[in-house]
Image (cartoon, rainbow, N blue to C red; front, side, top):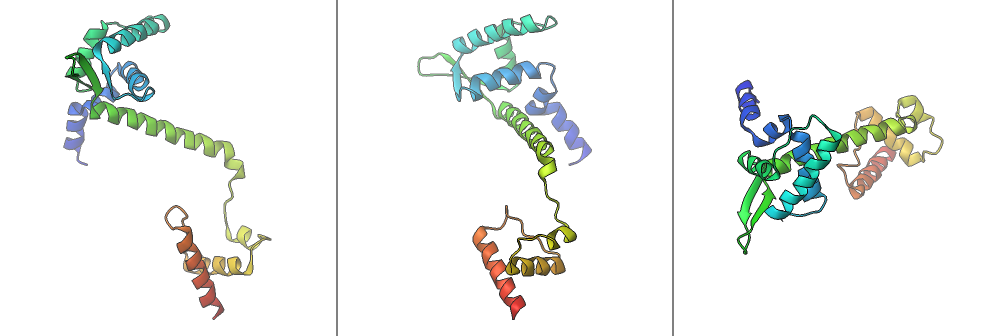
Length: 184
């Protein structure tokens, strides 16, 4: 990516504008709770205004510096900012759905949280992690002769099996054919 492209995206992308905005915690937490937690695609304006009003009252209690607008003003602004899409259902009632920009911002935060949890999990269980070095692998008591032959073969050729990328059947066939070749 080039400097100009990044600068343009930071200025114009609704997703990045949302993530950089002062109201990002309000917007993203509200969207997440109303659309993702409840697994809803669309919500009527009346319902969304009511829930947003209650959420704003809650935020005012925990954050005295919270600057408040009316729920309707917020919903209109979020539509203008391309975070919500306002359409009408068969009864001509206004209905709101998340835009792809809002979906991307939520997905990014979910992914970020998931990665943090992976790091925490690793840190928690780090003491149980096994680092395979030559001296440890040679001293493993429970290697079968086939496994020892495979380890030697892989060490010599600097090859490594990655279970995420190689199916178990392929790995078994590879191990079996390698051991047979080494014994020949």
